Length: 117
Image (cartoon, rainbow, N blue to C red; front, side):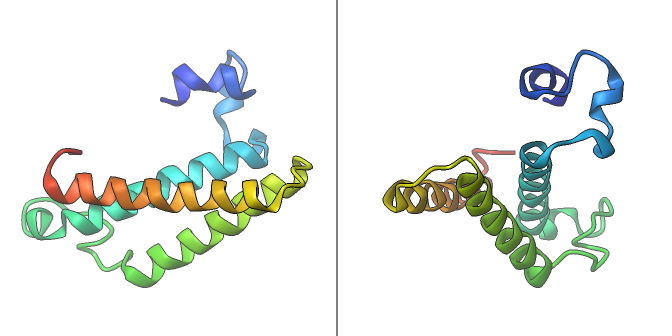
C-alpha cells in the first residue's frame, strides 16, 4: 500500500521517502493506525495462530493493554492533527474521531466473521 499511496501523501517517488525518519505527522499516524489494525488482527486470530506460526500476540508482546495504548495514542494524534489543520468545528472533530472508532469496530467484526482475512 505504501508504494501505491506513498507518492500521493508526500513520500516521493524514491525509496528514501519510505524511511520512518522522513515521515511527517500524518504519515506517522497512518503507520501507527496500520500497526493498530495488525495488532487487532493478530489478537482476533490468536487461537488459529497458536502452535502454527509465531506472532507478537502468541509471543506475549501484544495484548489488550498494548492495543489500548496504541488506540489511545492514535486517537490523541488524530485529534491533534485535526486541531493543527485549523478545523474549528468541534462537532466535525468529534464526528471524525467517532468515525475512526466506528471503522475500527467494523474492522474487528469483519475479522471475527472471517470477512476480512
